Length: 117
Image (cartoon, rainbow, N blue to C red; front, side, top):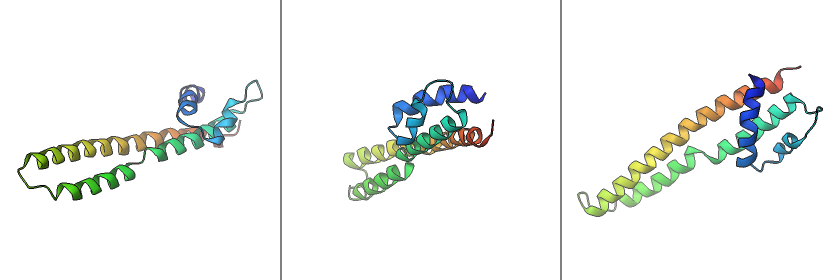
């Protein structure tokens, strides 16, 4: 199970992150320590997940909502603005649900890293 997680997570992390801790993952040969690799993968995934933070999206949405308040209720421009806000709400929801998934994977990787062989 542990190796299956690593085999799936590592290529994804290398593509998504240029995090320096991922350099450990690039080691090859029999001397590669799975605990070390899992720790590096968790660090890299943590860096990636911080880039997909819902907080930044929420701040952007809040600023956009202030602009929308300036539009006349019932006008075409207000309807367009409300539609944009609805799309932003969906993006925020997706970002927040992804954070939970990232956290779960990071937890599994930390468990592998802390498990002495």
